[in-house]
Image (cartoon, rainbow, N blue to C red):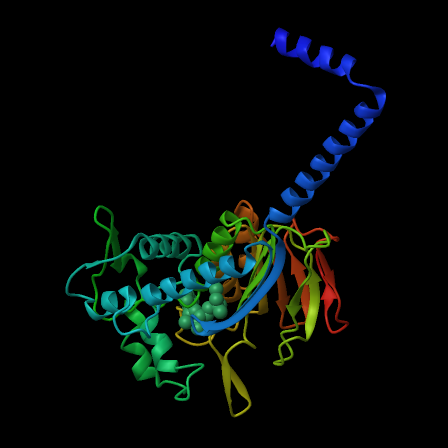
Length: 364
Ligand code: AMP
Ligand code: MG
């Protein structure tokens, strides 16, 4: 090392001033060429977006980062995988098989389905059964969102209502299995699977290096970081009095979290001037009608936010807010039938802004 430094010093002293300048220019040129090449060879950050129908809803995603197109493909493939396991409309899905073998035998399931079913049971317990993952038969009787939607007879409802006990869904690990120990119940994950799919999309995109994005799974929104221009993402809370999508009641500015809304405007039919919507109260078998007409839950876990948005809609404002205040990392924005907006204690002014004059802000 010492000898090398000595050699360089000797050579440097021997060459003339003119030669020194020339060498400096050559070295500098090499440095500039190398730097340009290095910058050009770095992967470029781009925006990519995609819209697809999966899990019975329209899913849109817009992401920004390196390999944005490829990352989106991976994320959407994952949703397809989740749909194939958890949809009860897919003939050989895991959920279909659990339902088919109800009262007969346990069915092998994947870790994904185990996780979602276990979370569903946890939140069924926490919401005192308002969120109930085994009311598939009641959902089928109503058929809301299908061409055959109808008001079921009380007799038809009574065939299943007394059996809506989620403890009859028995899970086990090593190997993962699920068993419905009563043949009068069926699993329906319509109120939680989209949340899980949102979490999985966000996880894959982040692992792939996506630093900014917004995912919308039919009203379940997940945001990754900030917008590419470094400002916060803005999400509109749908005006529940309007059935047209895009009319907003207020806006939310979230960061790295999920915002999930359940509302009676999402799927419904009307008969004799009465709206029959898709959020069913397991206590009555009828569409829930306490006092909440839109329930928005904010949580870093979209799975949990999804289960809770459905449950809080059913529980109503007082019980719903009490539940949300008792849980960590969860906030709520509720709109009531009296057009009042109630927020949980963690919802700050700069996070949620009421925009529509049709509603009043009731709690801060
Ligand atoms: P969401 O839009 O997340 O509130 O979920 C509504 C969907 O979940 C419905 O279309 C049904 O498939 C299912 N569902 C309805 N009522 C309940 C309930 N009380 N508990 C669990 N799932 C429900
Ligand atoms: Mg839900």
